[in-house]
Picture (cartoon, rainbow, N blue to C red):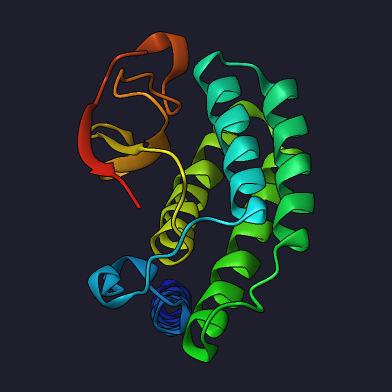
Length: 186
């Protein structure tokens, strides 16, 4: 009886420590979704942003087609595009924000490059937020569509060059699950 009580107390203590650690880690993450995109200066997109978007859309299309190897290759290309991005022409505040976005996005692209399909899709969710935040600062020469799937992990967004929904989170299982949430013209 005493041994099981000690084990229960130890288990509860470990749970409490783990929960506290997770909360602290969550506080440290910067939530780019709360950024005030309205106050940001929108400029014509630069070539580095367009290269990132090209690789991002290659990745999205590979996920739509359930093609793990193509998605991994696109992830590798994205890593290189993120590393080549130069934020020098932006304000100091924008440069700091862009550095955070690029760092986070690069990490997710690296995971995508070496993961199986389900894990690639998990990382694509956060990567999509990062790319959306990047475009909010840098702008783009193309019209983009932010699309939303209410079913994947409590709701997930991605960017597309078409207003036709092709879901990268479910691929061929539910290719048209989702809707256009917003049109981005900047």
